[in-house]
Each structure stands twice: as structure tokens, then as C-alpha cells.
Amino acid sequence: MEPLCVNEIVEATKGRLVNGDKSLSIKGISIDSRSIKKGDLFIAIKGERFDGHDFINDAVKNGASGIILSSLHSPLKTLSPAFIIKVSDTLKALQNLAGYYRGKFDVPIVGITGSNGKTTVKDMIHNMLFQNFNPAKTIGNYNNQVGLPLTVFRLSKDNRAGIFEVGISSYEEMENLGEIVCPDIAVITNINIAHMQYFRTVKNLVNAKAKLLEFVPKEGVAILNADDKYFSLLKDGAKCRVISFGIKNKADVMAEDIGLLPTSTKFLLNGAVKITLPISGIHNVYNALAAASVSLQFSEDLNLVRDGLGDFKPPEMRMQIIKTKNLTVINDAYNANPASTRAALEVLRNVNSNSNGTKHRKVFIFGNMFELGDCKVSEHKKIGKLVAESQIDIFITVGELAGLSAVAAKESGLNENKIFSFKNTEEVKEKLLSILQSNDTLLLKGSRAMRLENILETLKDS
Image (cartoon, rainbow, N blue to C red):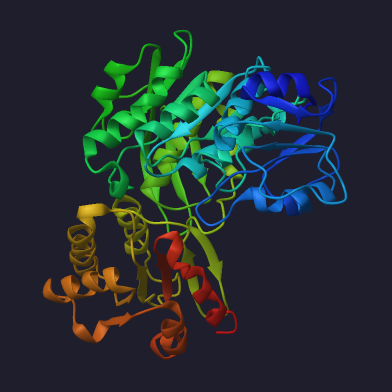
């Protein structure tokens, strides 16, 4: 982060300086008193389960130079910060300050949204652009109302680009985040049922994702999935140049001759360059095409795309292949919605025998999918039916909602001796080793709150 003067902070946040000198500056911004570095600004955010105002004294003790607050619950003890700025809403102050800071950089900014694939696409783009553009990027899952503003502060004079995920659960959130990012290049990976608990209707979901395009300047670019159900609607709403990517429908950036292997994927990009992805699944071909579409806006060299995708390493818990002594685990447990679950299940279906003819049993451990609103029952039942049709050898469910999938799988013809249902991961861990066999391939898939990756502790010595 580049230094910011107190005077700039006051103006950007529409706050009031109640203590300190306007000529002072800060070197970093934090909302966590435990991670404060000397010279940082601490912003006291009120969350659902905590209130940053309760940790102001800790922040000052740990070296914070300044504080942004909306109220002071108790007097500052012993130490005093160099300055204090009072605002009406600290979250809005954080967002306004991030928007101001982003405006200080005249470099291309990529904003990525969509129901699935945001993190994978972001990391693929970064891998292609790293050497020539040293882009700043979203770290981890810092893509929401708090995380995205904090990510924007990672921009520095050393960066020639920025790549930011935009994760939302409402129309209003995209309004806020779009205004912060103001992307020169906007990517919408796909639109599927996700976060329906908040969006209520698919129309609301589509409109919210499409809102990002309104913040792209006329000379900017919208990168859209030509095979997505809502492509035409999104394209018609864009006021900038549109670049399309796809497999089925004609697009500007296309994949042909696709070969799906258990741990990798091969395809021909735009009829010219052979790509080998060290990650499996047709959905990751789409992710690669979206990323390639962005890379080609920076350089027309297809070799950069080939090399960037060739040595790409998937983020943890996103189609991550883990091999133990006797098992192969596909860890896709970071999150789940119906579309991403179907995609992961398709990867498991493509697992074949070893070269020596040894058969892989296909084991699917499936946890609850959350935030589906009124669709939660029907969508879990659909997954169960799909499992029964997918030649899965063992189906293990975790949680009440996933249990509905188990019932649906049985009703759709899957042998009940192949189905095991548990209430939580601890129950699974107690029984799992008695269910598994050598050479099994195991897929983990469930929403973040299920934390299915904890099951891996049981498999370490298997």
C-alpha cells in the first residue's frame, strides 16, 4: 500500500477529525487489532459477531497510528493514537476510502464475478500476467463487502494491473463493490443458482451480477460466457466492447478437441495452441477460457496463455488432487452450489481404471449446500438423482440436507448398500476407514460451513 495522508482519509470517508494532525499519514489499513503494524490505520468495523470498537485499545497498544470509529464505548487507556476520525458508518468509510484509493492508480483493473470459478479464474489470470505486469490480486476469499476494500489497498506503485474478485449476495452489494473496483475489464464467469436465500429469484441474481458491467467505461471490455443461459441478456446490457468465450456456441475465444483426463485436461485454444491444464473438469476449461480472454487484452501472445495455464496450481480445496498411500482424494470442499457440485461429480465420473487395469471405486462424500432458499430441498434431491445416474460406487452424505440426496439416490435406483448417511464430519471420521478400500478415488464436496476437509485427517495414514 502507498501512504495516505489524514487529510485524504477525512475527505474520502466524509468523516470528522476529532483528534490529531491532518498532515500525518498512514502506511497500512487493518480491521483486526491482532494484525496491526506500527503506523497502520485501524477501522472499527461492526460485524455480526464482533464489534471492532471493543478492540480499539488493543489496536493502539499494538501500534495503530490512527482510528476510524463511529462511537467510543470506553475511554482510550494509557496510549493515545496520533489521530481519530469519527464517521457515521465505519464499513461505508472503509468502502469509500478503498474507492478513493483505487482511483489513484491508472492501471488496468480486472473485476471478476459469477456463480462459480471466480477464484480459479483470478489465479489463472495472475499466472499469465505475473511476469510482465506484476498484478495485485485478491488473496484468499477477500471478495466481499469487507474483504474487497481491504484487497484494493494491496495496490502499489509496483503493480501494473489489479485482479479482484467481486463476491456478492445482494444487488446492493454489487452497487457498493462495483463503485469501488470500477473495472476496466469485467468478467462474468457464469450464472447459476447460488445464494438464493438472499436473491430470492433468478432474475434478481442475474440483475445483480449484470450490475458490475455498469461500472465498466465505454472503452473497457466485458468478458462473457457465450454458452451461459443469460449471455444475450448480459451482452445487450453491456455498454462496452464484449469478448465472448465458450465451447458450444461460436465465441471469440474457444476450446476444441477437449480431452478430459482424471488429473488434467487438454484442449486446442482458438484452433492454434495446444493447452494442457494440470486440473480436471470441463468447468475448468471454461475457467481457462475466461482467463485467456483477459490475458489476450494485455498481450496477443497465445504462448503466454499456454505457459500460464500449463504451470497453473489450483487453489486449495478447489479440485485439489491429494494422493495418499492407497487413495486418491479430489478435494473440492471449499464451497458448493448445485452447478459446482454437478461439475465436480462429472470429474469423478471420468475417473477410470489404472494403466495396470486396477479398478478405482468412485466415492462421493457430499455435504449440505447452503444459501439455496426455497430451492434447498429440490436441489438436494436433484443431486441425489444425478448420483444414482453417475455410476458412483459409494455415496456418503453429511448433514440433514445432504441426507435428502441420499434418499433421492436410493429412490432413483442406487443400491442402499452403497449409501451411508451421517449427521456430521465427526461421525464420518469414525466410520470412513471401514467403508473405504485401497485404490478408491474420493471426492469431497460441500458448502464452506460443512468443513469437509477435516475428514482428510482420517486419511493421512490410510
